[in-house]
Length: 457
Image (tube, rainbow, N blue to C red; front, side, top):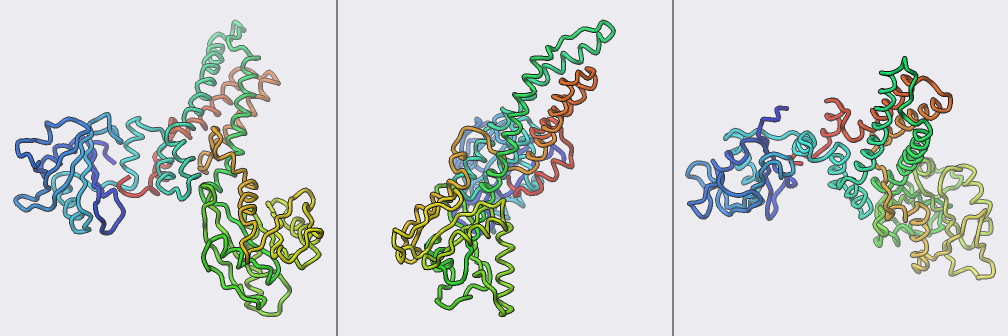
């Protein structure tokens, strides 16, 4: 990848639409655009125009006009990439887009690789690596919560925290390494008690970030919720009510659902992936048996299990405890359906500290209460807190390694190990924090990150 190249790409999705945007970035972007653009005001030359201006005119290949366009000029360093950049808004015909792109390449640009515009933004110091990754997350966001988390990271919330931690550690390691220069004089420039206090503070901060990953992961990918229960307790009816459509077949015949049915909805900005499963029971039917086995697999991968219980049954507590014993790490919400058939005097309110939710899927009663219970179960309020939420696996792994290294620093301070060993452990913490922001990186890491970007971004 030559940073001196001028790159171009279509930045809007494939296909025909009202308009499309073609991007051009690099040292020769304005000159290349000038060679194919004719302003409506024929006395205007693109190369003489101010930055952050928009111009109406035509794109032409020689004497042949390809399209009427709006052309935006951005000049280095005040552009997305930090380079001279051009954005051409043309009509959305696939043919027109291809003609303009071919013309730009003929005039000296080359086709951009996936994520190359954002890569250049990182290389030119406009954003750090965590912000670059947040760009991809923002594009892929499918709910308000995932948008909010990605936007916070893209605007530098996570970067600022990492930079602050590194700055404090760098100050101490410089003093420790100064001690090594005067090792024969047995002096201490770094106050060990202050360093202990800082190390404890960083340990807690890293732990909080690491612990946020579970929530961040479900925000980013959606919360998988398995709807399980015996046949004919109303699982499919509930799924249809939650989705507000007839997604699953509803029948009085037991064993109607033979395979898992999935769909997603957003509840107060959180994406939930609901999975309607086959009814759990003993069966000699091979096909139904396969469906039940698949139900158990879905329960293993679910974050939350909605255990649907029939109001006409009397063994609520036994069924809940049996399921909890089988999946002790799962969030299990007991949901009693057909509650309109149950007298209030017989209602069990709590099972082993877990509130029982009473609904009627058929009559759409108490569905809002069920949704609120789901939000509470995945700690919905944490999304709106000011704290950073980790959604990226690479960040999670780097934070875990940094935490292990800071633990060694804490142990070393406690055991009064020599300054040179202490400095090595602190350097390791700095290394892993630097991997997150991109201060420590290599071509392999960059390649893995940017290969998943769309071309044009």
